[in-house]
Image 1 (cartoon, rainbow, N blue to C red):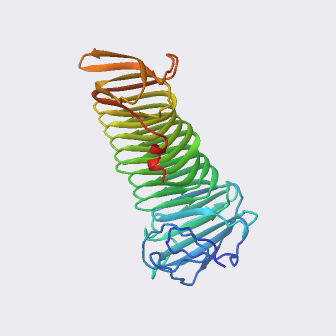
Image 2 (image 1 turned 120 degrees about the horizontal axis):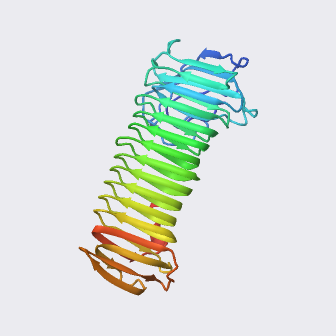
Length: 390
């Protein structure tokens, strides 16, 4: 019986119940027969999920290990090749006390005994998988107990994929390779890349810290936690859902595009644009040269400022707020009901204040500034805000 695959399409075949293990800290190594698998357009392995796969040549399993480990330990990995980490099959290993390691390579490839160090330290409860010389075209697949801390560092173009893991600490660093996290729960999650992509699939739970350098992009389905800190340099930062107590998002030159955000959010961009499909909570967004486009669905305190660009604020018909809009030009849609509206000219701009939808002066404020651009206030329904939630 074959166990489920990693979903990367790297062609690593894994034996299920027919593995043999040794005592704690002792490993069993066995060269395997070639079981070709073509990741692009070929037959999918039994039990594998129909996920996106990486194209590549025919691959085969080269070597595999099985360890008896503590169910609550740590995995430390240093590799220049692809790595996939996922939990053990709970039906095959109900005690969750095994660590399965498998190395795959291209057809005709070999693995020298000095290419990869695989060892388990019973005292530290740490599994180490280390190599500087393994072929970058190889791939390593690891099945861990469900709750296992991760400390992973990938060099070169090596990619990292982590699925369905629960842990207290998860740390992933890549150079040019992609980091894929799918349905991960971690008290502390730290991801850093110098040039690769960061992709978060499903829901990621925990206190999250993501730093992407150069032109690296960050794309997110859903983050849920107390604290989120994400920064990019020249790459896009895109998230569909953020449910956090506090979030800080920043980019030097890349755009920031958010779907539905909840909680206290601070967003900063120097050169890029900021777009938010729906904001519910306190929001403070600032851009130096980029434009800002925000739909405020439920009101906390909202402060928006673009020093050299323009700002568009969209609100539902029912939203009540105290308004202060200042810019080189201010455009208020005539369909919006603003009471006690005042208009003042200062320097080379205009300042408009008023009460939205019969709000009181004690209502929370929407404060918008665009000293060199235009401030636009428009009506928008909740349904119209769902453009990113496909």
